[in-house]
Amino acid sequence: MINLKNLTKYFHQGSVNQVLALNDLSLNVDDGDFITVIGSNGAGKSTLLNCIAGSFFPDKGKILLKEQDITTWAEYRRAAFVGRVFQDPLLGTCAELSIEQNMALAAKRGAKRGLGRGVRSKDRSRFSQALKPLGLGLEDRLKDSVGLLSGGQRQALTMLMATIVRPEILLLDEHTAALDPKTAHQILDLTRNMVKEHKFTTLMVTHNMHHALNLGNRLIMLHRGQIILDISDEEKKSYTVEDLVARFYEIQGEEFSSDRILLA
Image (tube, rainbow, N blue to C red; front, side):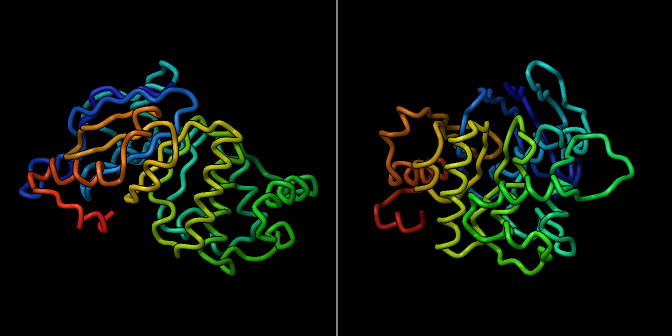
């Protein structure tokens, strides 16, 4: 469904600060895949998502969506088929606008826009029904400013906004990392349920090995801009957190001991 072919991406190319973020990376993402993405800091995880979203273009390689080359499409053009949730809950919503205004903007993602009422009565009914399953009471607060919400409430709202127009691919960039453990667990449950119910094709970046193993049907590990591990559902079931952490130390050329498992 989405094919990445030989992607290479440099930052500060030609300077003393040159960084090779993606190194001839290729990846085929099938329709309905839920892929967890792990790797050390600087491995290329967020760069991979940014290239798919169109936040910047690769220096080499191609990005194909259903065999159509979208490599040079601008970010706004890809917004019609990309849903994205960031690590920072503040990035996915506009604090000054109300809940219903944020949702109205999300509902028009990828569509032509003109002059007209921003939120109509039928929109409010639709938004209320969409918010109710979250169990956060937001369906009764449509006119409240999003700035009044907690981080977890904003992240749940962002998840809904990212998928209110069905995306071809959902990109989750450590979307629970900035939340407290209880709220992070709630957002992960929401993620699991939404992806399962709607069969969203999903890439989820995480540093949590338990989440990487327990969520999704596929896991990839990045190192220095390359995929060094790609395991499917059945094989993933045979892996433990200790196995993954040991692989991290192996690629770093360090000896692994079981007491380092706390790092995961």
